[in-house]
Image (tube, rainbow over all chains, first blue to last red; front, side, top):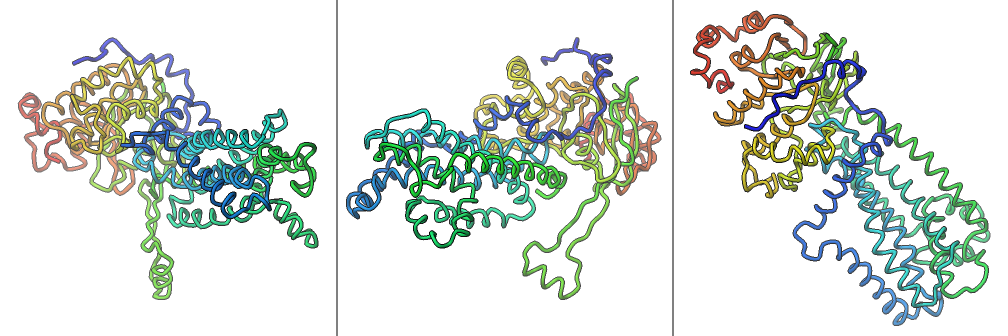
Length: 302
Length: 265
């Protein structure tokens, strides 16, 4: 038997450690302190998703590419939407990349703790690990879509600019913060009532329609010209500025040479985006506090 | 000696919900049935364990042993009072580790070790020892979902036992292993004890508690009923009644390995 009989607990070293509650209490900060564990959990999730698949991660390129081609051919060329909305395929795909990222973080994050119940029930660790790992997995899946979007835009006349890249980053950042916040809260709620994963599925149906993804923002701006309240409520949704930023970065520059502004995007889009990001960080804080409260009873309710 | 585990007036309440859907709950409310009930699984328990002590935690089924162990290991938090520990904790709760069914044995070893706080280098260094101890051979790269219950708990025990921890918790792990493995576990636990780690051992087997521990805590319906000497604790539980042989014949212990290892469970 291989053992290490000479290893003895150093009593002096143990005495120097503080007496502390054995459960983790640092919240999200603990998650980033234990990056090695986080890395393993992300690998595990990725592996589980492509278990028994020969192409593996390549599938995350194939599906968005086929989707993009369908939009381009069917909606753009056959149905002729390219006439009313310029480069409609790029328009819808840029919005869809953002919306998909959000719905994926939200819905797979919601199931994150229940899916790992075998581990959660028996091992002490920051439970925030699971929703955060699932957000990272979703983020990894955004990359292929971004590449297809950029390649598609490139062939329709897009030239990368510093401002464009910044807008792209900002758009994804807003979604990441908001997605993490909601994944935290709902992953804990889902332990108590599995209804929440169905509620989340239902909620994600709305997201397609409350952002300028299917229709261009200009159409919405004209339609609500006499209803300023509706206009501002629409923009208060954190997803709207994220989608608009992505369109400002990728879609609009494919045909607009010169400054981009109202009605293609709202006025002061950058100011709005920073306010949105601030609000999302606030939501994240609230969700973390709620998670900490709910976490106390997670192990017994799983 | 330094305090290793301090439990102060800890209580843990469980809420049982009888009806989970709104329809069932509405019907229950109209009939004025209870829709939930709560009970104290651990009720105002206090004790202190010094570093290096081995303590047997005994009690009948449902007396709160596993819950208390979960409070010490940090999976659960007490509603009242507090549980404080010093240093790294490893061990097994309720026979079997927190393994992910879809992952292979190898991946689970790394994941489990990481959760226990081991680094990648540490795990790699000990990997061969862990595999040798678990003795699962070619099944190492098979998803643990296909493992037999014995293999499953052997691997879990192997990881826990090779973690450099200051506190080691074991919950009836010996109940599932076969005889050679039980023997190996008990030897390893003796070594852990010699290494100076704090040991909390949950078992119904009076014989193995006698050989392993120098103190016994007895839980009765969540209340700490006894705290003290091993022999007295076993007598307190009346575990010596039926099989007096087992407790008295210490010389025959090796021969009577089965009862010592808890095969009577």
